[in-house]
Image (cartoon, rainbow, N blue to C red; front, side, top):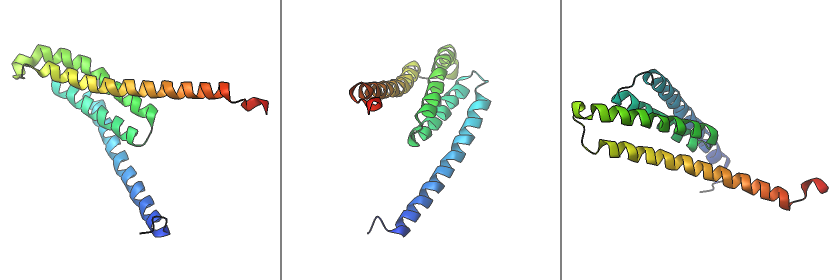
Length: 141
């Protein structure tokens, strides 16, 4: 198979465009759901907000849109505090397992890992650019 064939390139472009449109529509739908649920403070609504925010962030990460992915990961992370507090209050009433708090902390740790890795990548890129400017005499040509 010739990967540089015009027909194959056109097919790849069409599949890419269709996939992007599909995931954009899902992202819009998740954003609307997250917005409508964020006013509630019950365990189910907060869990759904985390899930929706995470899915939108993963979509933007897939598109290599780092700033929007970071925004949505931060939004997901911000829901964990209220979720944990609400869960500890209502855990017994709702019949949740004893390790429910650990599960919430595990999810928060995962999102925190994503946020820290983004911060480290950004810092490394910033330092690389700064070092390149110091090494390369771009303005003295």
